[in-house]
Length: 164
Image (cartoon, rainbow, N blue to C red; front, top):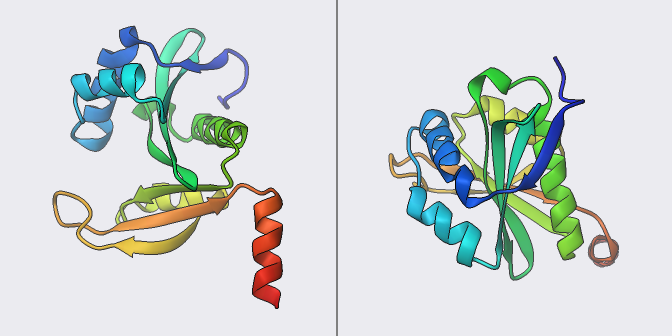
C-alpha cells in the first residue's frame, strides 16, 4: 500500500508523547525522553512537532526547529511496518511546507553515514552532504550534515553572486 487515502498530519499533542517516545526507542535505540518531548511541544517556540496518522492510527512523526538562517529536521521516524510505503516522503514534504511558511530557504539534518537507507532517501529528495560532523553521535560515529535549498529569492541572489 502506498501513502494516500486515510493519511493525516497534525500537530503533536501531549497525549502523543508516549507513542513518540516508544517510536524513538524502537527506531533509534534511544530517546531524548518524555520530559524533553513535553518541553519541545509546550515551551519551545522554535520547534514544531507533527504526528502522522493512517486511518486514525499513529504511525510516525517529524520534528523541526527554526534556526537563525534556516531550519533543521531534528527527527523523523515511522513504525517499522510503515516504512517503504511512501509515508516518509509525505512527512518530509510536510516538513518542507512548514519551513516554506516560516520563510526558511535552507533545510538541514544530520544522518549517520552507516544509515545507507536514510542517506539515499534524503539524497533522492534533493538533500546533499554539505559537511561531516566528526564524532557527532555518542558512540563516536560521524554525522553527515545534509542540506537542501527550498528555493526562493535568496537562491537567485546567491547563484548570481557565484557566477560573477
